[in-house]
Length: 210
Picture 1 (spheres, rainbow, N blue to C red):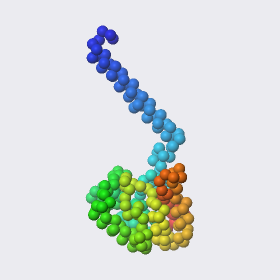
Picture 2: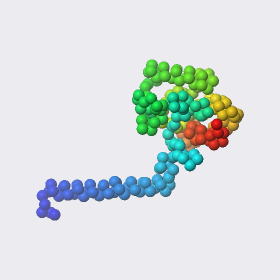
Picture 3: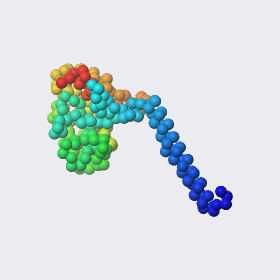
Picture 4: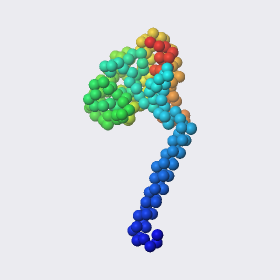
């Protein structure tokens, strides 16, 4: 080995390092992490999938549209935040598509964003029969990923009466479910309380089917 030229020995040493690091970091480490994930965080590691009547209907980590084939929101369901996760130009894609995670990238003073917000405010005011002043910011603005599965409790509150009327149940019954699926701040002080839309709508279908 020592008789080989120095540049050859350097290449052999580099090749050995490459092989060792490939095995350690490319095989052993991923397998260990995967094993820990499956053993300790199986649900999260597999996508936090949610099943209903034996069928996977979505993930608690991703938003989902509750609309008809024309993109019109269904009155019997709570509606998610606006989503920019959409294939540009698609006629049957209305948001919350995990293949196209995206934000608007528009600043708060951008006239396009301001126009879109005002339009959404008018639509929500008419759909939920509330005043524009009651509509929270998350109801008219998309998240950074476009795939936020949660809405604020304030956003859920303005939808309660509409959902109750569509399902012919009392608003109090709907509020009780909203409270059940409201998650508090992480560790008691991080972030804000949120409501998972998919889980809430599944609970509505299970308890108060249309």
